[in-house]
Length: 114
Image (cartoon, rainbow, N blue to C red):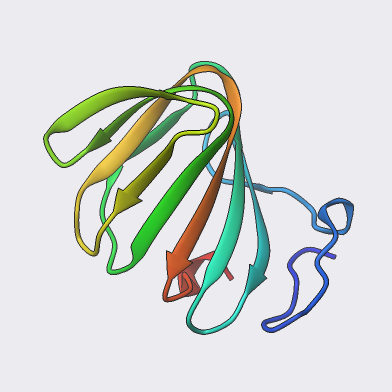
């Protein structure tokens, strides 16, 4: 399947095809409702998530790898097990220092990912 259906109870990783999300980045939209969305992003070393903002609250969990992350005016290096909160409208972005995976949770869901 390309994308799971809204409200789908069981979303198996291998059933969701990765979608290109920029050079060196692939995205898998996992589960979502109108209010909440879970997305996995896999980064190659050197890949960039450009600075951007959006009208969603976002929590990012570093599942694997090492990233240089900017949120607002602060830049920090984060690793597996770290979590980041990005509130509505705050500019943020990252550079992947060691190949890894970010798990993003958005509220409300990102319509532009569907």
